[in-house]
Length: 257
Ligand SMILES: [Fe+2]
Image (tube, rainbow, N blue to C red; front, side, top):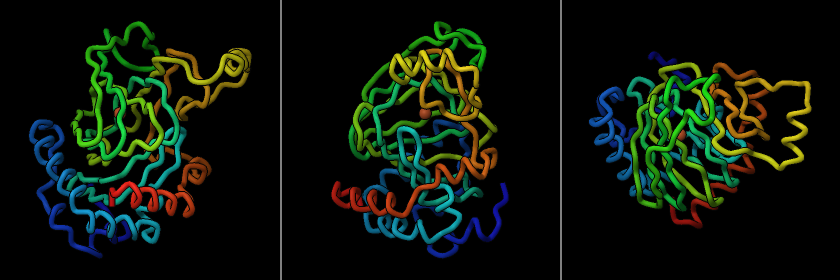
């Protein structure tokens, strides 16, 4: 994947030895796990570097455009070297989340910095897409991930990491996307009964490419990349400066940076 000079400004502006590696081969998931989990742990331990990269994010148009406020989490992108298949971002939970069985557009490693969640692994008895039925996606493993725990997952694997507490923070190292969209199935409903009744009665249908605020168990939607989102959708999701400042202070108070 080729990047232009705007995309690489943050990379050219400072040298980070830890990220100066050969391109990551995410199809060799075992080797990718070894490399990326070491990078995540070393980066999390280097608080000066972590803080320095975080501080300049709002001033870099490329990184800032990828910082989002979402339904249950906020994301801050710290680094994106597409030539090395290496994007680093923070994810902070902002609300309790339902179990959502999903695969991804990219493979990644995740290091929990604060908090905890239950990690579910699933298998689909057939294909996994908008036609898949709720009962055809079964749990095959379940464990708790807490601060200090790290995992690596291939983009085709099905899992769910529902936030059980607000303020859970993870550091993610992901590869470049290898598909345009990835399916997500609600394994439990989202929203109160009245809202769900309204949803059933409603004649209007929501785009399946947007995460619904209200959904019944079994509902499937697709996550897409920034390039496939409308300008309006991007601007709705864009993190505000105030929110960034809030997170910066929180991460300081939690001694993450
Ligand atoms: Fe996931």
